Length: 357
Image (tube, rainbow, N blue to C red; front, side, top):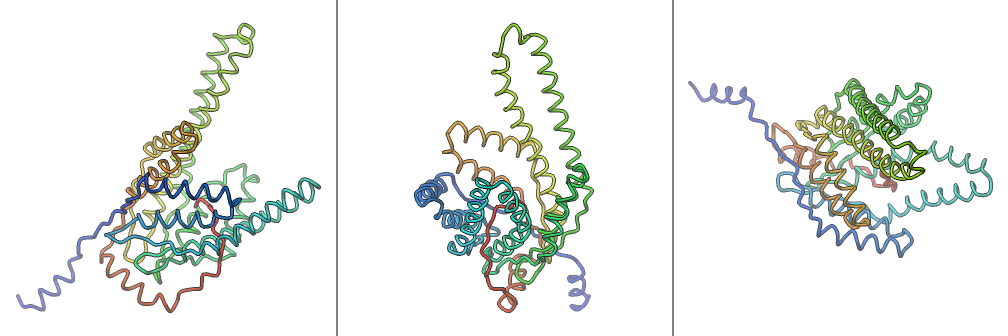
């Protein structure tokens, strides 16, 4: 067999895909020191330091999140975020003052704010992507402002008109807007998901909610049958109120984390970034356990365990996200980085809201 034939066979045989699991090395002790300083300075500066606190927090989590021995970078300027915070804060003060003196004026400002929310989401996604980087290559968000209004405003207005039946579709369009428009350097992500999985996830969440409500109803019926209010007065209700609140809290956590895990797993696995595929293996019940323990820890510690809770949840989510690529990260980042300087956009946006996509 000649050398040319051997070379052709080598090209025809695909190489084994390489898998890179995200690694998170942050610790509660380190983050607690950052968090406590951020909290103190934000309070004594009446919220002005919040922009610097956000950047310091993001920089810590990015620097301790790595793939293949390389960590991410967060490059935002706190002053830019402060400008956005001042605009949002000014709008809230205006709404509060107007509502105090005239309810109609407050309502008009609330409507106007709702109309600009899609604009803020659009700006936030651009800002967040542009200030995130990996191996000196920035991320980008190429979604349009018009699509943001169609997704976040116009579809949102249809929710009450459809009695909530369109809500899974609305959630699907939000995820599609994000996953189909983010890019790494010059390589744009592609999202091939369908709305069916979203309806399935929300249907199962509805069944969980109905089961919880039925269980609560049975318990309430049992209590009223065996402990009539006429005999025990208001004591039964004093005991029932915290129990009902706890059930409501646990039920909300169950539904929220179940949907989050199902949708996140699906969206990542239906995304392709050039030669890169993703695999997310979040377990809804594990997420629920982590969330419940985090809430209990925060309540018992009067908030001091917030850093512990955030580190714990972040580690679990990142540990369950895997990147699969045929050519390796070196070839991928070299390819996208070669054109980054030519197409990079100026970071002129300064909104950085928590939109929970």
